[in-house]
Image 1 (cartoon, rainbow, N blue to C red):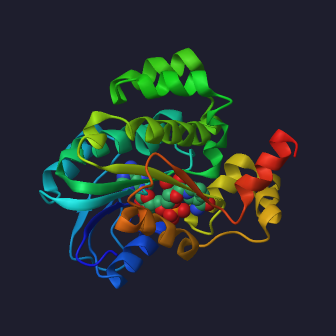
Image 2: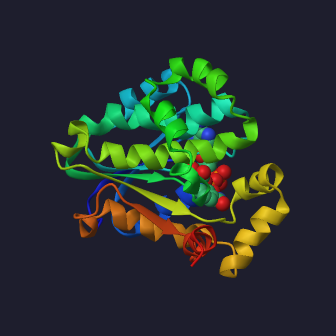
Length: 261
Ligand SMILES: NC(=O)c1ccc[n+]([C@@H]2O[C@H](COP(=O)([O-])OP(=O)(O)OC[C@H]3O[C@@H](n4cnc5c(N)ncnc54)[C@H](O)[C@@H]3O)[C@@H](O)[C@H]2O)c1
């Protein structure tokens, strides 16, 4: 289902993005990797850039091919580098890049945003999420953060709440909808990649261990990659604006606790 497609993957140099790249190539796709750090293995096409800055996004847009079939937004940070930078990378840069690239996605193409179970609170925090999603971009971030007093520890969950809310919104935006572009999210639970160590520092071992205990084990990058690539494929042609939890049942378990069933 991916044979001959060209897929752009951010965050290609580690963890989930690296595995998505390997699997996409094995399935016959051409890939273009984007990352701040060099890839572990040489790639035919790689762009070294920071998606968390206007300049980095502009460089990526300038360098990418004129036409491609899917964009996997995988690059992300844990929140350790502070709220402003975390939101710039995990949401505002991702959105700016996606909106700039949408006209170059082939008709019927797909965007897949790697969100997280950490974005679960988007409904509970809807008013705050709406305010942040409504902001134009990087330049509004400082005043917004000052107005909403977001502690650094909340930046990661907030960034993923925004990503989930925007995924649903974008599915109905003319920019995507009018050309039959689908935009979906995948929300992993805890996955054994380098970022998990940082989650342990930010959220604490008990929280991470409880999430893992609820579903019996942590995930691995190969658990996540097939779901992302399925959403890129034509097999997902009637799936749009959706969030697919890929977490061994963690979201179902949290729903049971939160909703009391
Ligand atoms: N591992 C988990 O437990 C987990 C759980 C839920 C969601 N996620 C999400 O999955 C995605 C991938 O994470 P991972 O587990 O593979 O982590 P990872 O740390 O292994 O990989 C993240 C990649 O993003 C790149 N990156 C970071 N900042 C960048 C920037 N400014 N510009 C370009 N590239 C940048 C890094 O260099 C790295 O290669 C992230 O969005 C993360 O939030 C991970």
